Image (cartoon, rainbow, N blue to C red; front, side):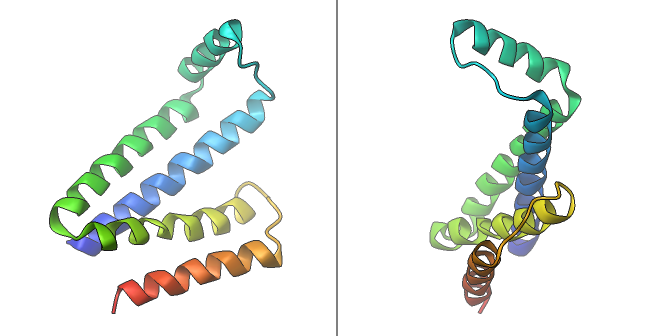
Length: 119
């Protein structure tokens, strides 16, 4: 059950971040002042992928809470880093971002750390 929770949390986190990045890039630059915050809140309500991103983030949060009930925190937090790998790969494929050797190497190091957790 532990690895199922890690998988759900990882996929939900990655999906949330990807959807948020996609919509915010489409929206363009936003002001952070009082009026800008109002526009930003209205934009969140109007954009379905941002709402879906929030729902995915909630799934991730509750999966993490269930995980820390059944596994040590010293396992749960590093295992949650699996989303970094999934996000890096998905950003390159779906968002057409350039993933250079340093980013790819960093994601590979995270993957090695997660593999050590499983032993």
